[in-house]
Image (cartoon, rainbow, N blue to C red):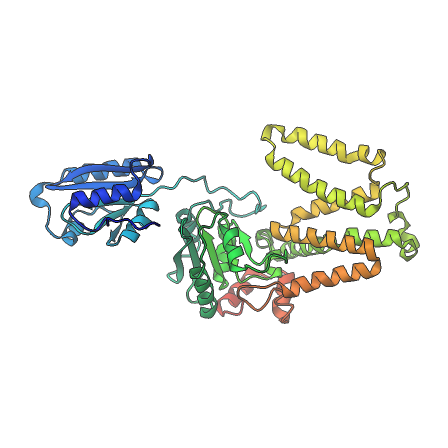
Length: 482
């Protein structure tokens, strides 16, 4: 911010008022409100952002201040606050930097003649939507609320589930221009102090102009040189219940203002594969859902490269499985068919996102016709390839984590291309690249991306595959073993 020649905390009332007008550009900013009033025998002026101000509350406050008599106004600022400050979140501002920070954050600031300090009230009411269930993290059974784009309501959703004095919400600001609020949330008695200190220091050292893309900008700053590995480095969730469960396990949660997703640290591949539905059903059902998700993800990586390898070497296929081979004439090389369909599926996803709701059904019908019998009859695609790509398209939606879904897609395409170019050797190299990417994927804290498989912890690994009963989970959580 450019330093002004005048300071809002120097000079008399008129000089300070003029300095504020220059600092906030009140002559051109239509959304910054300023209103002059008289409190007893003292002149006063308030400043606030129109979009954040709750009109009914400020009207009652102004009515109260206007009713104060001149003989009742004390000479000292502290006496005034103690005697007349209404029931609200009150902040005393004594520097110009803090004044700019608070007024642009939405606080209502009062300059009162004769007092050097500035009195600020937190009367903000951020525009926001209802706490509806997230579209991506839906559950068949369980709570239906979800985070929104404002930190205060999100904090309330977590506090509602964890009524413990050890639950800490630590606020940081990131960005020279945006000054984005970043909340670091943790359980003081369960988090690892070294891991917490590492996270906070990294956030405090961030030197950027703004977090233009919220949590994604923050994630890219925390891992500036790991863009080449598509596997997610954080676990994201928009569910308050999942966030509260991670906090009780000793994890650190980072929330960025204007973003409804919580970033969970540390994380691992197995924790990303978990889903809220695993815990809203009995253990045997939750275990089945978890194993189905894990197996589906593995099959989604290898189904098309393996099919391509087998049709290039039909002698490897047992006689009982001869039906998997392509019997019709192949006009387009299978690898080209697979790649075209990979891009076409993403094209349909983007089209569905940008399509108005009233046209979604017609779009689905057209897509079904185009990618149905017509494409097979035209000779562009074979029915076997369409079948396996249909499985891949459905398998992508078994993952609640979108980043993991696209990581699986990228490595499937890489393995597909290597298999088409080098045969069995390319298939093996592609598999080794997947394993290497998993082992080398960095994590901000924790024992590693593949924990508890590497380093090996048999008990924890068993729990990652098989859902145990809740009393067992609570016992382990209390003893700090999770």
